[in-house]
Image (cartoon, rainbow, N blue to C red):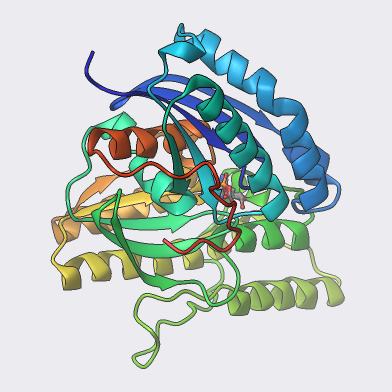
Length: 339
Ligand code: KG4
Ligand code: ZN
């Protein structure tokens, strides 16, 4: 086959991800997560993440090669997340990628984590339309990106000015005593609640607010206060209703701003990625609002939305296919790498 066979390594947060793709075809997606080691701290602990990556790195690469049915010498390139993310965690992946690329004599592609979250959809729905509008929502980021060319030109239209969307889910889960990570639990609970039970604030949706920026800290405070007032009054907290109402406020703002960005930029495709893209209400609401606006929605399956190595391999393969310049072996890990 002419399509490049690429191994991708992702270690920006708490998942050690190794994926292998050939062009737009997913061959392997091995993930080792340290999420359980962080659960009792209520969030990701950088030192624990770095150590877990170090332990999982080589076994996860070997597992991916085996799953894909290829050997390392078959690879055409090695891609790795160069940033943004936790510095120590990124360093483990970048070092491993350099070692493999150097030992194999194959090009190394350092890629941006956010662009990878967008590019992964090629493995599910084929070539990305150009331009693509992307809403990226995870525990670490909440951004609207306009991507005329995912390998070379990705423009941030807006981002969160405080908490990321996933972070808001995690914090509200903590307020409600539901554990970490909070997104999946709130998603599940919300199905048994009334989303109109409480009208929580929609941040940055006023006429003078930045049209594509997000803010979730005011929402978080409003929910926490509401719950506290109930508790202080000795009343039961209707947890499912609070979860559903909170989730409604988050998804309302996200979808409203994403659809508006598509309209104003004249883009007829919206991609949603990142861990929060797994949220069932976000998917349903985006489906509805995009259909009404004549926008085609592209959301990868949940396993490809959370951090994984396949997304890095997907972007590396696209760069190789387009003849982009590989990275030098001195490639730095950059915790605040811009798109
Ligand atoms: O992309 P991801 O795996 O890691 C990064 O943060 O980069 O995203 C994890 C985040 C967590 O905050 C988690 O609570 C959230 O995604 N999440 C969800 C759902 N599944 C995961 N949030 C809402 N609904 C979900 N179903
Ligand atoms: Zn991510």
